[in-house]
Length: 449
Image 1 (spheres, rainbow, N blue to C red):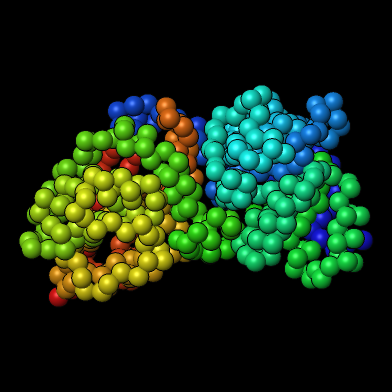
Image 2 (cartoon, rainbow, N blue to C red):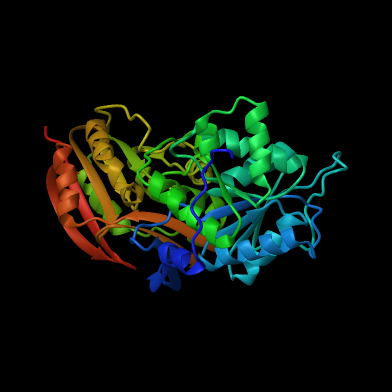
């Protein structure tokens, strides 16, 4: 038998006991509107990394086929565990995944391509109706979209298209082994096929080890939880295109959400300056002429206000927000980059404005980021931070009219904020609490002269 990542069989009750998630609903008043914040965490209280499950499989499987029913049931059980269901938007296995996800009251996402020349490709099926959809220009881009959108892959019976999809996710799992997205072969027929590939091809233990096999929804859910436990401490921080191929750092959840809804967010918030009193305080502390860095500039509203007095550079990891910021501020330098990985010039800025941005960075990267910001300040320079107050780390989903916006938060206590600034060599100017939809901390620090 091939050696690949099977889990021992267990009862449905055991699986549910080990893999249950909790869903916390909080009514919040954000920007004057009452919204529901949903936090999905595992039983140990840690925000979940795997949330979107991409299904691959044949488009010609009819609804009366047992395989169709198995996939429908699997997608339904995953949706009941609050996983979103992703597929190629076609008929067959793809429609089974969508319909099962809907039956489980889950979110469903289609990533599709409408061919103009490829007459043997099914394209988007009108009866496969998902909550969200995204179209691409060709088969390869559509497949990459399915890979990027998914945090895990369930590969079902299919033809050459499914073989090509399996080949891509299998290879990527080996290339990024240790931070890889899990590949789950669904069905009992896989043993013989993988054994044949192992005999005929040159397949090493890592390549076999990245594969899982499951024959029931309970096993799929167990595999997802077990895999997440194994890679939870992965610190694969990158702002390159490669981040689509790994289980991204928690900060990338926020980036993905902002990229998806940037235009709607911009339309809702355009012209609104939410923190003018804080901006005015910062501008009293930073004397002109000055170069200022806006960390997490978003669509550029704060930067636009700062630009009335300073030469401003904005850094923003979400590409679509960076594009909006450039549109709002055509004369401003806007860097589409992650502050965690981007190398800032040292001794360059009189002021660094970091409102509602540092709390989107995981604990493992915060000391390095604070040190980087301190080095980027000129002697006497000011770091002005606004972060969410609390303890621990959470992933929250804000229910907006235009969609669900997922955001990761590292919550700060006063002591932690002061300690991280102190370790970076910064002096305390002031720290205080402020209230909006939540409790926030304003921390103002200076670099010794």
